[in-house]
Image (cartoon, rainbow, N blue to C red; front, side, top):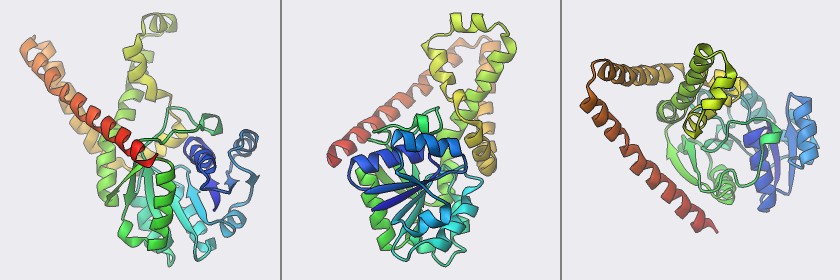
Length: 294
């Protein structure tokens, strides 16, 4: 199939690479407002041709919308206006309610499938794209009942090729849950980075003392502001609720330490250790899903 990727960064670029490697895409066209991104995507072999949006969409079997979430609904409308009757469009943003609401107003709604492949790194742009990014990871499909059988079949082919395990969810519920398991993690990392930079002005001291624990916790603070600022604001109600819950737990830790309640601190840490069992279960299911697609 001919695939158009709108947004040639980490997610769109990595999808293009794997879909070509795994013989799903016969040709990939690229659309990006940043000419340097298009030039790099061509140089890296992520795309074969750079095109204008309307032209690329009208000649494609599958369109992948991989741009910041605040612009995605408007661009989706233009895509649907130019989409061929048998073609499918998916978006891969981490906010679903806004784009699903926009899609619901379009006559070609059934040709759209709202997706969220749960994979990524702290890096951005075409340089960050690479093979096997999605293997064994989860993909969320939202409001699937509003998409046609043909569109869902195309999506199944795509995400099976990417070796992802797809789950179905309501768009509103997706946004509520993702505020806790993804967006709050990024807010926490950005805040830690700002706190350390503000308190410790001597960068040499930071890097001399920083261990793997600090590096892994603050890793997400390297993520693109162009991508994450819109996500936070588009999902603000859910994220504010998540931040309030996090601050409540943080204040509880603070009080226990302040009041020298070592038993309480120990109990809290032990309770938090339960996350290990859950994450190990998720990792195991991801490995099993990958094996099942080999």
